[in-house]
Length: 309
Image (tube, rainbow, N blue to C red; front, side):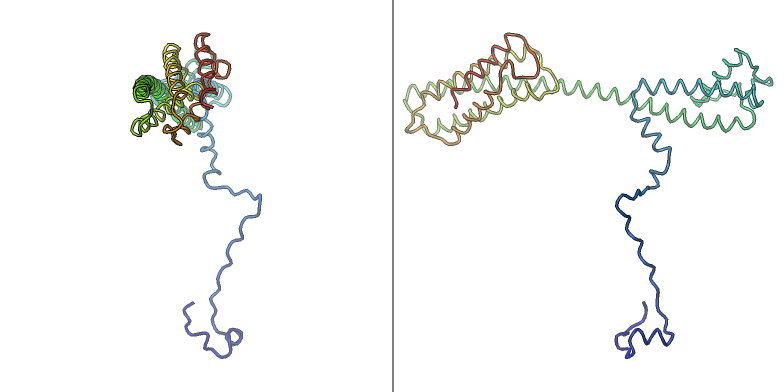
């Protein structure tokens, strides 16, 4: 307030005011809006922003149709204005006549105005120039939205192509990893047959192989249930066949695994997860309908899941 040591004034604030002492007045803060009170921002109060938002949500076909319809409507308005109030169009030094030829000229002028070409062969008269300016602005806005939609459509096509390529590469990696899993399982089976037990190093290798197999099985599960891209049936047939082979080999290895030195909580957890995932893969469970041969492979995978319970 600019006044210091007021607490030492003996009379206090009441005496200070009574003796005519200056007091700084503070404007009260604005009350907070009541519940349900509509608060409009400057942006929401402008109608043109809402118009742009509306145009942005339209499809390309609807935008083009609206743009062409607007041009025709403005052309008819120019032609009617020339007939009714005399504020029409002038081609050269002659007013546009109120006939079909004049209507064609008016629509032609409307196209030129909406495209912002402005040849100057046809000009508006009187207050009709204000309407011409409005059409020019609206035409630019709508035409800009049309160009944006064309670019966006091309971007969507490129994005879809990238997704398709990435999806195919992902399936190729899954197929390669399943071959490696099958090879590792065969090597572990051979060591178990030779030694009759699973040494610590071999057991850790089996744990790693089971983790890899679980991840690839989860990928195939996601492809069947959650993928937005329907895989090619030939590629899917190869994946399912590899899954069946790997599950059979893993089931045989798990059944013959010694109980005395082959215990591993991580391995048991991985096998249970594999069983749960495989149990959800069946010919009648997946959302997409596949060929009978693929359904048979899915049913085999579900049947093998019971060996990891």
